[in-house]
Length: 68
Image (cartoon, rainbow, N blue to C red):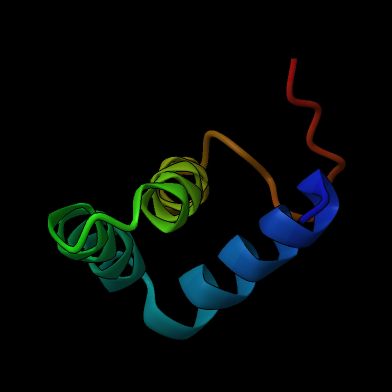
């Protein structure tokens, strides 16, 4: 998934669910790690970080995000 797509997904989840979206993502990480789904857990972990940044207004989802 491209960075822009990930940011768009996070923005939509944040808009739809607010701060609860961060909690949903973190719960998904734990559940997937317990099931041995490490790659999927890593995706949700990255998404949870981006969601947290959007919800706390550290990232504006309407602007391009650059990940180094």
